Length: 247
Ligand SMILES: Nc1ncnc2c1ncn2[C@@H]1O[C@H](COP(=O)(O)OP(=O)(O)O)[C@@H](O)[C@H]1O
Ligand SMILES: [Mg+2]
Image (cartoon, rainbow, N blue to C red):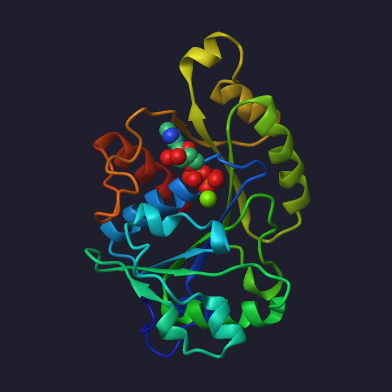
Protein backbone atom coordinates (compact mmCIF):
# COMPACT_ATOMS: atom_id res chain seq x y z
CA UNK A 1 0.00 0.00 0.00
CA UNK A 2 1.33 3.35 -1.03
CA UNK A 3 0.09 5.16 2.04
CA UNK A 4 3.28 6.75 3.30
CA UNK A 5 4.23 9.44 0.84
CA UNK A 6 4.89 12.12 3.42
CA UNK A 7 2.05 14.46 4.23
CA UNK A 8 0.99 15.11 0.67
CA UNK A 9 -0.99 11.93 0.00
CA UNK A 10 -4.45 12.34 -1.46
CA UNK A 11 -7.42 10.14 -0.56
CA UNK A 12 -6.75 8.05 -3.67
CA UNK A 13 -3.19 7.26 -2.55
CA UNK A 14 -4.61 5.18 0.27
CA UNK A 15 -7.77 3.87 -1.39
CA UNK A 16 -7.46 0.73 -3.46
CA UNK A 17 -8.52 0.58 -7.08
CA UNK A 18 -11.59 -1.40 -8.09
CA UNK A 19 -11.66 -3.59 -11.17
CA UNK A 20 -15.26 -4.65 -11.67
CA UNK A 21 -15.90 -7.68 -13.87
CA UNK A 22 -19.29 -7.85 -15.55
CA UNK A 23 -20.98 -9.47 -18.52
CA UNK A 24 -24.30 -9.40 -20.30
CA UNK A 25 -24.53 -13.16 -20.74
CA UNK A 26 -23.66 -16.01 -18.38
CA UNK A 27 -20.69 -18.35 -18.66
CA UNK A 28 -18.48 -15.87 -20.50
CA UNK A 29 -15.64 -16.45 -18.02
CA UNK A 30 -16.00 -13.59 -15.50
CA UNK A 31 -15.01 -15.68 -12.49
CA UNK A 32 -12.17 -17.40 -14.35
CA UNK A 33 -10.79 -14.02 -15.42
CA UNK A 34 -11.20 -12.63 -11.88
CA UNK A 35 -9.18 -15.54 -10.48
CA UNK A 36 -6.59 -15.34 -13.29
CA UNK A 37 -6.03 -11.62 -12.66
CA UNK A 38 -5.91 -12.19 -8.88
CA UNK A 39 -3.11 -14.69 -9.43
CA UNK A 40 -1.14 -12.18 -11.49
CA UNK A 41 -1.72 -9.54 -8.78
CA UNK A 42 -0.22 -12.01 -6.29
CA UNK A 43 2.84 -12.41 -8.50
CA UNK A 44 3.08 -8.61 -8.68
CA UNK A 45 2.93 -8.45 -4.86
CA UNK A 46 -0.18 -6.26 -4.92
CA UNK A 47 -2.38 -6.55 -1.83
CA UNK A 48 -5.61 -7.74 -3.41
CA UNK A 49 -9.12 -8.69 -2.40
CA UNK A 50 -11.07 -10.94 -4.72
CA UNK A 51 -14.69 -10.05 -3.94
CA UNK A 52 -17.17 -12.54 -5.30
CA UNK A 53 -20.63 -10.95 -5.39
CA UNK A 54 -22.49 -13.94 -6.80
CA UNK A 55 -23.86 -15.00 -3.40
CA UNK A 56 -24.91 -18.65 -3.41
CA UNK A 57 -23.87 -18.93 -7.08
CA UNK A 58 -20.27 -18.01 -6.33
CA UNK A 59 -17.47 -20.03 -7.89
CA UNK A 60 -14.24 -18.10 -7.21
CA UNK A 61 -13.86 -19.98 -3.90
CA UNK A 62 -13.94 -23.22 -5.90
CA UNK A 63 -11.25 -21.97 -8.29
CA UNK A 64 -9.14 -21.08 -5.23
CA UNK A 65 -9.88 -24.41 -3.49
CA UNK A 66 -11.16 -22.63 -0.36
CA UNK A 67 -14.84 -23.59 -0.51
CA UNK A 68 -14.65 -25.44 2.84
CA UNK A 69 -13.09 -22.43 4.51
CA UNK A 70 -15.69 -19.85 3.55
CA UNK A 71 -18.55 -19.68 6.04
CA UNK A 72 -19.15 -15.97 6.60
CA UNK A 73 -20.47 -13.73 3.86
CA UNK A 74 -20.10 -9.93 3.85
CA UNK A 75 -23.90 -9.84 3.94
CA UNK A 76 -23.59 -11.25 7.50
CA UNK A 77 -21.38 -8.28 8.32
CA UNK A 78 -24.10 -5.91 7.13
CA UNK A 79 -27.18 -7.72 8.41
CA UNK A 80 -25.91 -9.57 11.50
CA UNK A 81 -23.21 -7.04 12.33
CA UNK A 82 -20.51 -9.71 12.39
CA UNK A 83 -16.96 -8.22 12.43
CA UNK A 84 -15.72 -7.45 8.89
CA UNK A 85 -12.42 -9.28 9.35
CA UNK A 86 -14.21 -12.59 9.95
CA UNK A 87 -15.60 -12.40 6.39
CA UNK A 88 -12.20 -11.82 4.78
CA UNK A 89 -10.19 -14.93 4.09
CA UNK A 90 -6.45 -14.92 3.46
CA UNK A 91 -6.05 -17.44 0.62
CA UNK A 92 -3.75 -20.30 1.73
CA UNK A 93 -0.54 -20.47 -0.27
CA UNK A 94 -0.82 -16.79 -1.25
CA UNK A 95 0.86 -13.89 0.54
CA UNK A 96 -1.06 -10.97 -0.94
CA UNK A 97 -4.45 -12.41 -1.87
CA UNK A 98 -7.60 -12.39 0.24
CA UNK A 99 -11.10 -13.53 -0.65
CA UNK A 100 -14.55 -12.37 0.43
CA UNK A 101 -18.02 -13.03 -0.88
CA UNK A 102 -21.31 -11.21 -0.76
CA UNK A 103 -24.78 -11.36 -2.24
CA UNK A 104 -26.43 -8.43 -3.93
CA UNK A 105 -29.70 -8.95 -2.10
CA UNK A 106 -32.67 -6.67 -1.66
CA UNK A 107 -32.43 -6.73 2.15
CA UNK A 108 -29.07 -4.97 2.04
CA UNK A 109 -29.29 -1.27 1.25
CA UNK A 110 -26.80 -0.27 -1.41
CA UNK A 111 -25.39 2.52 0.81
CA UNK A 112 -24.46 -0.06 3.41
CA UNK A 113 -22.65 -2.17 0.84
CA UNK A 114 -21.00 1.01 -0.48
CA UNK A 115 -19.64 1.95 2.94
CA UNK A 116 -18.34 -1.58 3.38
CA UNK A 117 -16.52 -1.40 0.04
CA UNK A 118 -15.08 1.96 1.03
CA UNK A 119 -13.73 0.34 4.20
CA UNK A 120 -12.27 -2.49 2.11
CA UNK A 121 -10.61 0.03 -0.22
CA UNK A 122 -8.72 1.30 2.80
CA UNK A 123 -7.35 -2.19 3.44
CA UNK A 124 -6.42 -3.32 -0.08
CA UNK A 125 -4.54 -1.87 -3.05
CA UNK A 126 -6.80 -3.65 -5.50
CA UNK A 127 -10.32 -5.04 -5.27
CA UNK A 128 -11.32 -7.41 -8.05
CA UNK A 129 -15.09 -7.49 -7.97
CA UNK A 130 -16.79 -10.40 -9.73
CA UNK A 131 -20.41 -9.32 -10.28
CA UNK A 132 -23.30 -11.59 -11.31
CA UNK A 133 -24.32 -11.57 -14.97
CA UNK A 134 -26.16 -8.41 -16.00
CA UNK A 135 -25.37 -6.46 -12.81
CA UNK A 136 -24.57 -2.80 -12.94
CA UNK A 137 -21.25 -1.76 -11.35
CA UNK A 138 -21.40 0.39 -8.21
CA UNK A 139 -21.18 3.97 -9.22
CA UNK A 140 -21.35 7.30 -7.41
CA UNK A 141 -18.52 8.16 -5.07
CA UNK A 142 -17.27 4.56 -5.16
CA UNK A 143 -16.06 4.76 -8.73
CA UNK A 144 -13.09 6.83 -9.83
CA UNK A 145 -11.31 7.39 -13.12
CA UNK A 146 -8.50 5.01 -12.12
CA UNK A 147 -10.99 2.16 -11.69
CA UNK A 148 -11.81 -0.23 -14.50
CA UNK A 149 -14.88 -2.05 -15.73
CA UNK A 150 -14.11 -5.28 -17.58
CA UNK A 151 -16.98 -6.26 -19.78
CA UNK A 152 -16.47 -9.92 -20.65
CA UNK A 153 -17.97 -11.28 -23.85
CA UNK A 154 -17.63 -14.22 -26.19
CA UNK A 155 -17.01 -13.14 -29.79
CA UNK A 156 -20.37 -14.32 -31.09
CA UNK A 157 -23.63 -12.46 -31.82
CA UNK A 158 -25.45 -14.01 -28.83
CA UNK A 159 -22.95 -12.67 -26.34
CA UNK A 160 -22.14 -9.48 -28.23
CA UNK A 161 -25.69 -8.09 -28.20
CA UNK A 162 -26.09 -7.95 -24.38
CA UNK A 163 -22.48 -6.77 -24.16
CA UNK A 164 -23.19 -3.83 -26.51
CA UNK A 165 -26.26 -2.95 -24.53
CA UNK A 166 -24.36 -2.93 -21.20
CA UNK A 167 -21.53 -1.00 -22.85
CA UNK A 168 -23.93 1.76 -23.83
CA UNK A 169 -25.55 1.89 -20.41
CA UNK A 170 -22.17 2.14 -18.62
CA UNK A 171 -20.81 4.91 -20.87
CA UNK A 172 -21.56 7.68 -18.38
CA UNK A 173 -19.56 6.00 -15.61
CA UNK A 174 -16.27 7.61 -14.65
CA UNK A 175 -14.17 4.42 -14.92
CA UNK A 176 -12.78 3.15 -18.22
CA UNK A 177 -14.87 0.33 -19.71
CA UNK A 178 -12.78 -2.34 -21.37
CA UNK A 179 -14.40 -5.19 -23.28
CA UNK A 180 -12.53 -8.49 -22.84
CA UNK A 181 -13.00 -11.19 -25.46
CA UNK A 182 -12.96 -14.70 -24.03
CA UNK A 183 -13.48 -18.18 -25.45
CA UNK A 184 -12.22 -17.34 -28.93
CA UNK A 185 -12.23 -20.42 -31.14
CA UNK A 186 -10.35 -20.32 -34.45
CA UNK A 187 -12.45 -23.10 -35.95
CA UNK A 188 -15.62 -21.12 -35.22
CA UNK A 189 -14.05 -17.97 -36.69
CA UNK A 190 -13.22 -19.88 -39.88
CA UNK A 191 -16.81 -21.14 -40.04
CA UNK A 192 -17.99 -17.54 -39.51
CA UNK A 193 -19.72 -18.49 -36.27
CA UNK A 194 -17.47 -16.16 -34.26
CA UNK A 195 -15.99 -12.73 -34.96
CA UNK A 196 -12.25 -12.16 -35.03
CA UNK A 197 -10.67 -9.56 -32.74
CA UNK A 198 -10.60 -6.79 -35.35
CA UNK A 199 -14.28 -7.24 -36.09
CA UNK A 200 -15.09 -7.24 -32.36
CA UNK A 201 -13.17 -4.02 -31.96
CA UNK A 202 -14.98 -2.45 -34.92
CA UNK A 203 -18.40 -3.61 -33.72
CA UNK A 204 -17.83 -2.24 -30.22
CA UNK A 205 -16.04 0.81 -31.60
CA UNK A 206 -13.17 0.53 -29.12
CA UNK A 207 -10.09 -1.63 -28.56
CA UNK A 208 -10.76 -4.98 -26.92
CA UNK A 209 -8.61 -6.90 -24.44
CA UNK A 210 -7.62 -10.48 -25.10
CA UNK A 211 -8.67 -12.47 -26.97
CA UNK A 212 -8.44 -15.37 -24.56
CA UNK A 213 -8.71 -18.57 -26.59
CA UNK A 214 -10.99 -21.44 -25.67
CA UNK A 215 -8.52 -23.82 -24.06
CA UNK A 216 -9.21 -27.49 -23.43
CA UNK A 217 -6.85 -27.53 -20.45
CA UNK A 218 -8.08 -24.18 -19.12
CA UNK A 219 -7.07 -23.76 -15.47
CA UNK A 220 -5.45 -27.07 -14.71
CA UNK A 221 -6.39 -28.67 -11.40
CA UNK A 222 -9.68 -26.79 -11.65
CA UNK A 223 -12.00 -26.82 -8.64
CA UNK A 224 -10.79 -30.15 -7.28
CA UNK A 225 -10.65 -28.84 -3.75
CA UNK A 226 -6.87 -29.25 -3.52
CA UNK A 227 -5.64 -25.70 -3.44
CA UNK A 228 -5.87 -22.95 -5.99
CA UNK A 229 -6.01 -23.60 -9.71
CA UNK A 230 -2.61 -23.20 -11.31
CA UNK A 231 -2.07 -21.13 -14.43
CA UNK A 232 -0.23 -22.68 -17.34
CA UNK A 233 2.53 -20.53 -18.88
CA UNK A 234 0.13 -19.65 -21.71
CA UNK A 235 -2.58 -18.52 -19.26
CA UNK A 236 0.01 -16.57 -17.28
CA UNK A 237 1.09 -14.74 -20.44
CA UNK A 238 -2.50 -13.89 -21.40
CA UNK A 239 -3.56 -12.76 -17.92
CA UNK A 240 -0.33 -10.80 -17.45
CA UNK A 241 -1.00 -8.91 -20.68
CA UNK A 242 -4.56 -8.06 -19.57
CA UNK A 243 -3.36 -7.14 -16.06
CA UNK A 244 -0.71 -4.78 -17.45
CA UNK A 245 -3.28 -3.07 -19.69
CA UNK A 246 -5.49 -2.47 -16.64
CA UNK A 247 -2.83 -1.43 -14.13
N1 LIG B 1 -10.89 -19.37 -22.13
C1 LIG B 1 -11.51 -20.45 -21.67
N2 LIG B 1 -11.23 -21.67 -22.18
C2 LIG B 1 -11.88 -22.76 -21.73
N3 LIG B 1 -12.80 -22.76 -20.76
C3 LIG B 1 -13.14 -21.57 -20.23
C4 LIG B 1 -12.52 -20.34 -20.65
N4 LIG B 1 -13.07 -19.33 -19.95
C5 LIG B 1 -13.99 -19.88 -19.13
N5 LIG B 1 -14.02 -21.22 -19.30
C6 LIG B 1 -14.91 -22.16 -18.60
O1 LIG B 1 -16.27 -21.77 -18.82
C7 LIG B 1 -17.05 -22.01 -17.66
C8 LIG B 1 -17.70 -20.72 -17.22
O2 LIG B 1 -16.69 -19.82 -16.77
P1 LIG B 1 -16.94 -18.86 -15.54
O3 LIG B 1 -15.65 -18.16 -15.29
O4 LIG B 1 -17.55 -19.60 -14.39
O5 LIG B 1 -18.00 -17.86 -16.20
P2 LIG B 1 -18.95 -16.78 -15.51
O6 LIG B 1 -18.31 -16.41 -14.20
O7 LIG B 1 -18.98 -15.64 -16.48
O8 LIG B 1 -20.28 -17.41 -15.36
C9 LIG B 1 -16.09 -22.57 -16.60
O9 LIG B 1 -16.18 -23.99 -16.61
C10 LIG B 1 -14.72 -22.13 -17.08
O10 LIG B 1 -13.69 -22.99 -16.68
MG1 LIG C 1 -19.13 -16.49 -12.26
